[in-house]
Length: 438
Image 1 (cartoon, helix red, strand yellow):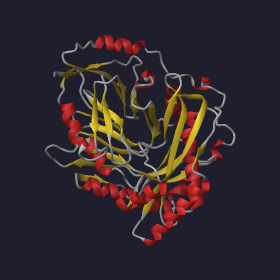
Image 2: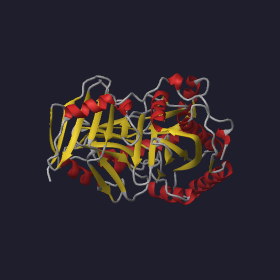
Image 3: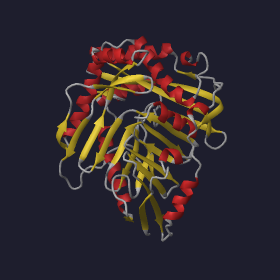
């Protein structure tokens, strides 16, 4: 079987992955590099899900392509994209037939993948992409009427009871932190318009990585705008930006940022995550740079403590790919807890059901091993499609880190802030009382 991939310059003529996105495509659009996958050249099965063994498997599959073209660099050539589950288990990544890429400098490219001698006509594929009508409506023209909804999910009392039980475990054992999640299901009428929602997510949080990953097997799509970089690799350079510690932005974001910056409880929660990330990367990196103090970043509705950790991979044969690094880091204490396995056992028991793709790695890796992987948070699982690209059911999930000193009511309020940031993208005007439902 002959596998070929040709990458050409796509020019700057409004060929942007966000603008060209259509439901059914795979989108991973970060602030420095965005990729849109159209069609399927191959599906890569990962029996164990986000485990280190997935990296070499994907690397071999991508390395089997004969790559030519006049554009090189991260995200060019064949790439594998997708959203992996939080728990170990069957997963898949897609090698799209077409990949439209764009970097932070405005450079755009198109990769066309073919097998078995199939002809490649890059000019025709570019013309078809240019013919796609832009999907980004004027923000003021977004639908103005609220969706009729019937929300349901974990009650506040049940969630605060979970927090109390977690605090008891922290007091009795070596558990330092556990991240508990709370879900809400919304039946939407009219249904959620995925294309419009993707653009709204980008408008609400331009610094986030907007993603939409369909699952053709069950008619769902996992979509969101993650503020948290799990890992990025460019050659030997590695970066990650864990988030932990949250405060509402409120009417005075500057004051709230100062409160967060001086919160002892949030500092402890954040340090647990940074220390765990440093421990993993120090086994693979030289010159690891870890700032002494976190910064505060603002996202859609909330602020977070954030620390950007960078390093250089030690020379190796071969060095770990971005996907391997993501699997080694996942799940960080930002979404699981510490110690890892103690926390995972407790959260599985308290939550009572698998998380699926919520809080799992979302991103891409290319044949060189470069890639970007974010954590699948601030997201919704959309299902029950009506018209193409319109979904009647949305499952939203938000998590909070529990450490000694956490207050159950405050943690419940934090889940509501995070759920609200998702609802703000899904629904132009939130129905009265929705934020207190469930």
